[in-house]
Amino acid sequence: MTDDIAASLSALIPQGYLRAAVNLANIALVRLDPKTGAFEGVSPQLAREFAERLGCRVEFVAYPSAASILDRVDQNEWDIAFLAADPAREDRLLFSPAYALIEGTLVVREATPYRTFQDVDAEGVEICVTRNAAYDLYLSRRLAHAKIVHSSTPGEALEMLVEGRHHAAAGVRQALERFAGERKGFRVLAEPFLIIRQTIAVSCSRHAAGRLVREFVEEALQQGFSKNVVRDAQSNGVALARE
Image 1: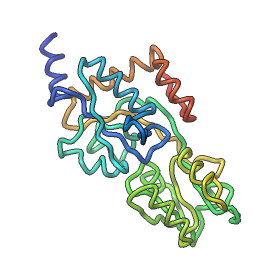
Image 2 (image 1 turned 120 degrees about the vertical axis):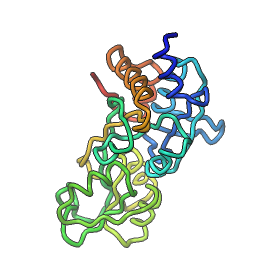
Image 3 (image 1 turned 90 degrees about the vertical axis):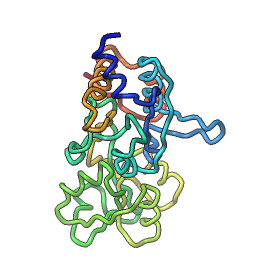
Image 4 (image 1 turned 180 degrees about the vertical axis):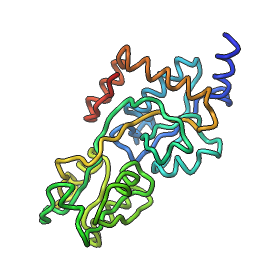
């Protein structure tokens, strides 16, 4: 092992093993099996394969939202984080190329006239949005008329909508469709307002670590993802990125 590689490994896994932060609210990419306690989905599978490449074990650090992961960037709780890339996060994080693309959209009440994002972006409309989620950052820049009402987690945003105080809730398509399937009287807009670029991120202070992460994702994009990653993506309706 060269000195450069050893230094990069030390920067990436100072504890000697890989700590991977995952967002439990993003059910398109992460699931916790209640029976086994095992993490499943595209993101955990990539973490396992990355750890295997590094020659170490992986431990998952679970958070209820992307914001809670971001809040701990400087607390030495994780080494890599599965997060969406966004310009507003670039002052704190280095992002790999995107490994997956998921849709951000809106859920509304069945009886409302809203059919498109443009319909919802109207005066007097309130949209429940998880604070500092990728779709929150995007909507904060994009909305011209509608008002954002923040929640702490995606689940809380949906409950706020159910309580009848607001007009729509934003989120990842898979989570919103599961919600609408379990609750009568709601529907998900067919049109996404955002294609979310999912990446593996490290702290901005860890450039050597960032190079290792970037190389891992670039290799997967060039050579193709493993059968396990492809299987998990297909079973959850996730589009894997291409070079």
